[in-house]
Image (cartoon, rainbow, N blue to C red; front, side, top):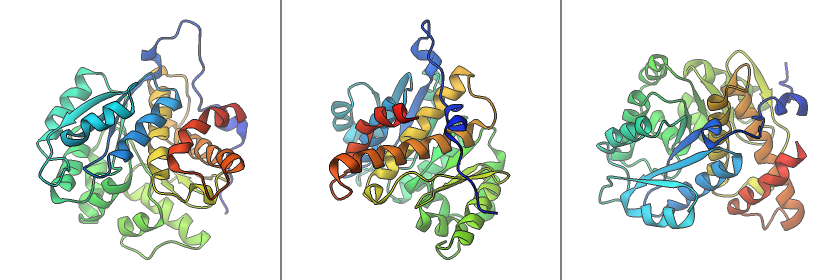
Amino acid sequence: MTPKPLSKAELREGLVERKDDDNKGVYGHVLLVAGSRGMAGAAVLGARTALRSGAGLVSVAVPAGVADVVAGAVPSAMTLALPDNAAGTFRPEGVERLRAYARERRITCASIGPGLTTHPDAVRFVLHALSSIPLPFVVDADALNALSLQEPAAVAQLFRARKLPCVFTPHPGEMARALKTATPLSDADRLRAVERLARDWSGVALLKGRRTLISSGVRTVANTTGGPALAKGGSGDVLTGLIAGLWAQALASGRVAGDQALRCAALGAWLHGTAGDLAAKELTAWSVASSDLPDFLPRAFAAL
């Protein structure tokens, strides 16, 4: 059966209502773990988008060497500088500081992956973080690549042992590496792949591309917004920050019922695609850059 998109009414159920006496704590605290030397922009894009999503607080954990760049680019977010190596990537020792920060700052949920590289130190950092930090995670990009380097049974066990859910956001190439299969191209292959990853890794999987698919392994829905304007480097970093920000609001406020991970992933995909469509109308599909997308999110929210 072909998965159907959620209606606008269903998507709106994932939005956290604003009340006059709310404070920033009601809307959650997002922790983005991203970046490396040469890819500080991944952290900047994610942080800018998490702020545009409506999250109450945003923190960005980055290798120490790029912390000043990120802090200057996103002044509304807090910056956590973690130990880096000679290559400018995270070192595994930084996970203990990250875990302490998450506890001290009452982080609601986190994302990990954009711009990390697959340097062996970064891979160990990802595995240690996912296995030891008790937070819901959006897992993207190089975090997915780090997991794909491991034995499938070990990855499945890691996620079964976690107390809290994850949302995985691969593009088709990352999906193929994660499942150790050919790249899913046909509609049938894409459906099988997204449902299998959700089941194997005990979370919600979002397979990017035209007609993005989102699955809990039990329920699968499609997204119909977005187009070639989104086929730019950094677009996925924007989606990661957006889903994390929406999920933080749902978790912290308690105002979103049902499967929050699936609902927020689907809502994030719709808003991300709509922002791309709106940007393309104004800038053309040729000239939209990923850095433009956060600025079109207000119009995407208004369209919903």
